[in-house]
Amino acid sequence: MCFKTAHVYFIFAMLKNNNMTANDKTPLVINDKILKSLCQEYLVEIGFGLYDDLPDIKVRYVLGTNKFGYAYFGNFFFFGNDFYVWDDDERWKDDHNQDVVEAVFQDRYDRTGYAHRVIFAGVETEFVDSNGERIFTGDVIKLEESADYVQFYAVGAWAHEDGGGCYCFILDNHYLSLEECARRNYKLTRMGTVFYQLDASDFMEVNMRTMQFNGWRDTYEDRQRKLLMAKFTPNFDKEEWKYGALEIIGAEYNWRK
Image (tube, rainbow, N blue to C red; front, side, top):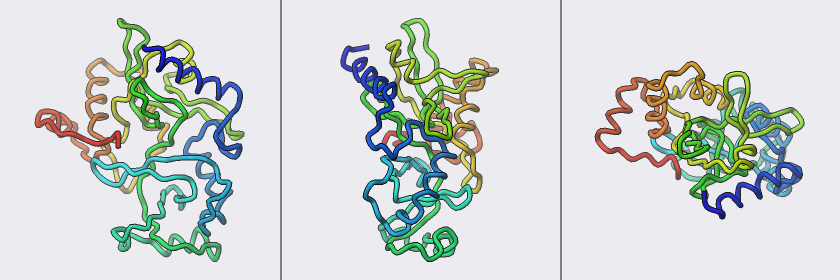
């Protein structure tokens, strides 16, 4: 690992150790449950489009096969387990759900745009990988402890109600934090995401998806199969052979964008 990359890891680890964030209102660690709680806490600000002094949070969501979208806090909300994003683009006009807006905000909203349902796909962490790319929860990471020891794990969020915790690889009965990986100068490289074999009508927490990817009972063949699917995300195909077919034809998915 080059000095520059290791130095970046070190800086972000120090920020966490000193409880520093870009915004004092932003929890250090965010999972699905905490994000829902924050949306409820700032419901009025979201409904009226008031962006001053909001938590500094960027999330990822699924727009469709082979396409992620991104939004900042203030432009999304939850309706039960369903995740909605506000968008000004006219292409979402027919997908706008006014009934949901009224159910969530009642009379506490006054903003234009279209609220449409998408699949929540993780939150941006303060960590970067070996290519300088920000790591999101739900990312599949190539973890190189040394030239002879390489593993592939998905990133989750071990979060507490007070906003503490860590971003980590959730394993069998323990976890390995990104902070610890940074401290040890492990090389981390994003290889894909856990958002494969999706079901548009179902909700599954990001941590649950990551734990399924990090299955401790998996064989070598299981891990290789999951890694292949992770490269072609987001994807709704249920049949595993279709992911192999995408590799054979040289398909390119834009999960990094």
